[in-house]
Image (cartoon, rainbow, N blue to C red; front, side, top):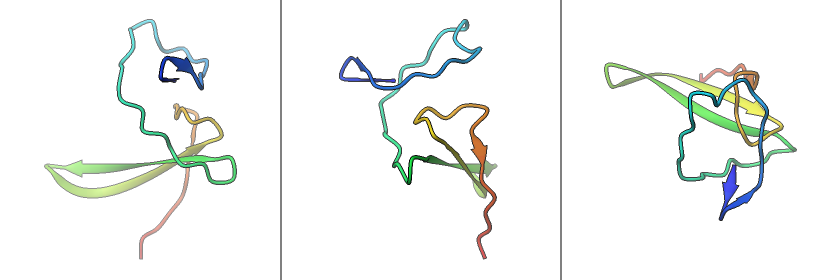
Amino acid sequence: MLRHGDLVAERQSPYGAEGYIRQALAPLPNFSGQYPVLGSWLVDHVPCGLSIREDDNPITCNTSRFLPHAIL
């Protein structure tokens, strides 16, 4: 993860041989050392689910925790 050309975070993973995607940095909030990210699920353009994943690294990966939640 680069900010103004400076490396601010990195994560070792088996990914990368395929190439990389560049996107704008949208820093995640830090809550007690954890970085949560929300994901939404759509089916035919209709919202149908929400996921929450968090990690102690600001780069979310396939081993980041999936947090249980309920909206009542």
